[in-house]
Length: 279
Length: 336
Image 1 (spheres, chains in turn blue, purple):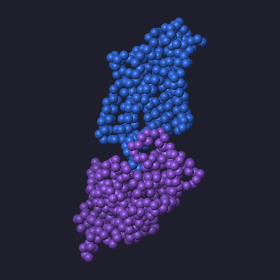
Image 2 (cartoon, chains in turn orange, red):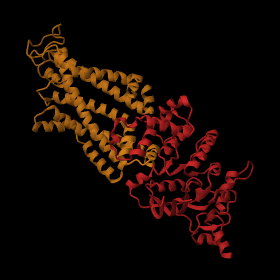
Image 3 (cartoon, one colour):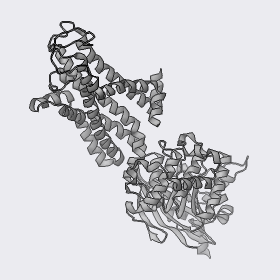
Image 4 (cartoon, rainbow over the protein chains, first blue to last red):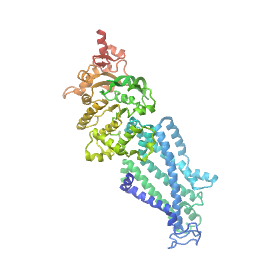
């Protein structure tokens, strides 16, 4: 209920949720909405028409259908990686911030190590040894993008740990698990949401880059793969804008929506930031 | 009358980069059942540290020496697990700062439900993972409303609005009373109120005092305050603290009307000063808790200091019904 109110009261978050929501619905209902089989061959290089809304590609696959099905892969990778990264980041950040001392030092040292691992080269390296599939990409993106979240959560937990309500809950007899779950977690929730959305955006971009480089999973349709084929099979050279523009536009729009949500939520949780954004 | 809480020679130290801060050094105090004990002193004299130490919440301070027993049980070295059973359900704390003591993410109803659930089921019950955790059932709701009425928030129609309010939507006085209701819901043997009337306006303060006076009939109360009016109107036993030590304690009438320790005299005269009278400042700020002066900590600023004040540690002496830690009275006894 409160979430609905927050979304409706903030135009930034509202538009973000609307954009991402539409893409989400498309991704779920892609099978029903596709006018053609995106894997079926037909007449190549057709211009947009009534039959093929966005024309066909070099092997005659319907680009509009590809686009719908591609949203599923892109969002799936984005959200899975986001969930993985946030779960790890929140867990480590909470423990480090709440426990402090040696545990904090160890965990933050580990975080710093992971922070400097470059995600893209790592995935490129891994795909040399392992056949690329989307879960490998999800795992790698998830496992390298949690440090940022962990650091932010830790610093927030450090201040909340000292707050009066944690102290008074302790005086009521609360143990550590209770404090973390019932008092600290709800108060870092907006931050978690903002960070989650950012990781999703980064993961989607990374998926697109990998696919564009030819390191994606060739057995799936994704926006990155579409861009790759449009580039490799002469779509750009011939100026077939209906081939290369839509996937790029979809990636951009989706990330814009996610950023809107992230900014809005972050502003909501930090009034000082809101003033800056309003300016 | 049975003894509920007994503190013997309690020392609590804080390790800081500048040295060891001796926040409590040799506190002796007894709290009798069905009595209201007041703890008075300036900021920084160790009142709050003493309260928190009773609950073992003095971290990062450490208890160096001394013993405490509660309800006939030695709680000095109790494990964290066991302390969690004592906190709240046996000794409840009404925290110092009402502005931050309630969680901003939960409504009044949710926080009071939490108190009930903690009392009934304790920690570690799978209940804490349930989504329905903060939804009170009819019985619990009735109990919550009852507790709010008990603290004077019984304005019928607005009860519903109060229950669904977040802490920032409430005034300081109401927050203070919600905190009291929360402590009462735990049905503790001892209620400790840390500065219950500070930061409240006059009218609210009077109402809260009225409430504490009513509470005093029902439970054992321990009130920490630097405000004379608060202590005078509700306490029957008063302890005055200076520099981490209780300098004078006894029945409130005797201590407040006829203070004998030089520090008590200055402190009370400050509070009772009439307009136009010169202000005598006890100047506690000059007291260095890391390297306290030898002997009695008060002697550097004491108007009646004697040579032996710097030489010997003071111990409590019983003078009439009052226990005083001052060399002046050691002298008297010696002369007798």
